[in-house]
Length: 259
Length: 205
Image 1 (cartoon, chains in turn green, blue):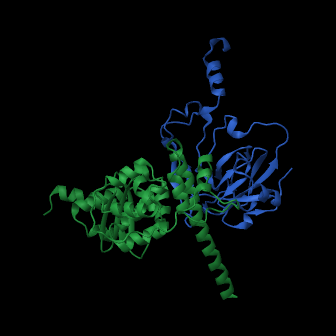
Image 2 (cartoon, chains in turn orange, green):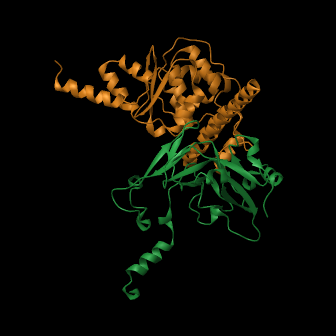
Image 3 (cartoon, rainbow over the protein chains, first blue to last red):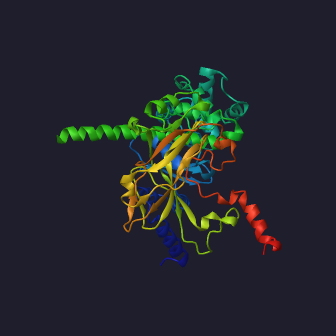
């Protein structure tokens, strides 16, 4: 027979899991009791709108990503999906939240390459801005050496350099990352420094997200936190505009089909 | 003088400091005739019934606003219910910068008004204002109504300001630059000092 402690823990667990999506519950049910408790306690809090939007942008593949605010970065992969925790105080910063993609990729090269294709060079700056801990399985040395190989120290502050050069090296030599060109971000940096949401003069959101993230990295510390909200608004606008266009196209096709 | 469509588009091309900004525009048809349609954003402040007492505007800065308000996020594609006589604060999806020689009026769409939805009470947007607009949404009808983020809820009509004026940002304005709905900042009004002083002075009794 179960002890009263067992019964109390089970009751707490049932109450916490109520209202969580079924596929997340299936993942949690496959974990050990301590892991279940740790992750359940995280998933009862809502994900920040900024993290939600960044996940929409970053998500690759069919597998489930379950993201929750917590006190620190954490990751747990199961055959049913990946659980990712991010530090709640950083949840309103889109560049820090871009690091969710790197935490998902870990040291799986094919995932890393796919993520770099989405984020470009901002993948490097996301690691720094998110304060990713060295204990995570992220290939810091590969990212750093590939960046230096391509761009030398151009655009790198001493603190970014320090972050990467202090990371412990944990990899066999492999082909450098193909970064592609650096994003052109100066117009958006001017807009952020001036205190407005990055935009095109047509009123549309910026055509691409990495330049906005890159611009955010270069905003000076006193304005940085407020600029994150403006950058988030621009990214949310870009994603919504794409969804809007897709929906409008679909609506027109349906009208033609029904005609 | 109301600024027409061509004038609005021309002002959106100007250098940053003089630029009319309305972003994101999800469809080009949002600017038509002499107005810009604005959409309902995804952030809301729900007003709650507080167990601790009424809102006292003179002390609002010191009380915990959590007692009578709750922030919620509703994604585009989801909906939120607005009950009869309920007030919620919403926000425009668009971030706006009004040039210093213009001002704007927020006009609720009559289609929503006919369902009982009142969209805004603070209908004037001052010259130089920068930020998303907080919308006071109230259901004046007897039937609950759903609110859908992303829908067009109001129009902005821009007017030329003649003569000298002080732009919003330089005028001690309290609402510069928000991207979400903002609760009342009535307690920051300078007048409270005078009202408190008058109330405490026995010579006035």
